[in-house]
Image (cartoon, rainbow, N blue to C red; front, side, top):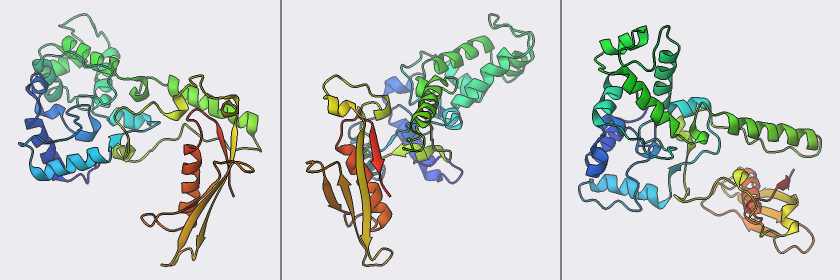
Length: 316
């Protein structure tokens, strides 16, 4: 059910159809089946536990396993391509649900081919850039409007307004037209490099996943999880020590690295006699390697400081 690429199994689409049939009547009122295309990429039918008896038990197990481990779409940075690929119906980043008649929703699906954010954005752009387009005229004579009327659309103006409305409620993080947040992060990163070049390599917060959209799904992502750490502001309760940059020495090691008898561990050192200093054995459920030890050390180090602190990881 997670995959979005051409290898997505037909059973995933069948599962979506079953879930659609189990939606509350309030959700079905103005929503044709095609509006529910991907369970994990849309903001619809989210429950703490799925116990509805009409859902087959095998599917309930899948859903409850996902909820148990908090499987959610939770990317810190999205590429423009992924923003365009997200389903526009029940958009996962919508700040509110736009009002729309079922007739309009069906027309957008069937005659305008509106399934993703990119589809809606393309339709609006084509209409706005078509010669002689009149956005105020239900009987606009431009080529774009004549084409969709030829497909059976009775009111191109209404459908353009509906698509604009859906795009307008998308949060900036998910909006392909909003580059302010990305520009801000890029500016901060360049500034950090200028200040600390040759001393520290700052983490590039502009990095994003450029592969499949579903690769942005994460486990252990709480529904009411706070905003990402890089967007959090200090609440005033941290002391001056935590307001300053915190250097942390981390290292990983592994005995018999690469063999069946490998045993890995991690070390974290804040300073002489600091109670946060710790050595950790890599659990048996993780790959026993030096790299695992290194990554575990960084993770545990980050957990031992306030979420708003700037940390400098010093490692080999």
